[in-house]
Amino acid sequence: MTWGLPSCVDPRDPAYASAPRVFGNFIRFWHDRHGIGDEDTTASLAAVSRWEATYFQRGDDPVIARRRARTRRILDAESA
Image 1 (cartoon, rainbow, N blue to C red):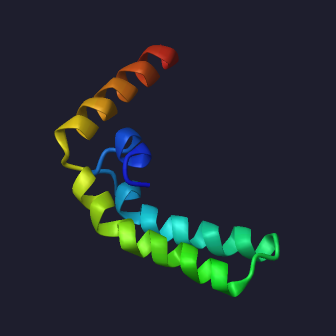
Image 2 (tube, helix red, strand yellow):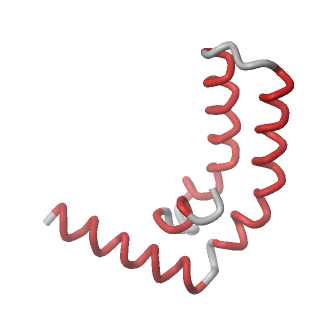
């Protein structure tokens, strides 16, 4: 969550801001679907919360911005 997604999604995109909520919802869904207990679900959601501030800081990180630009160039070339 702290380097993969910031490397692909522009922080100006509304999807960027919703990522921690989406991760949390996905964790709840997956754990419920696969019978993973409440204790593990709570721990997973706590990890998302713990890394949320770092995730938002990474949006402006110059190294991440270069990765994001490189990813964009690759995706643009593949779709051309």
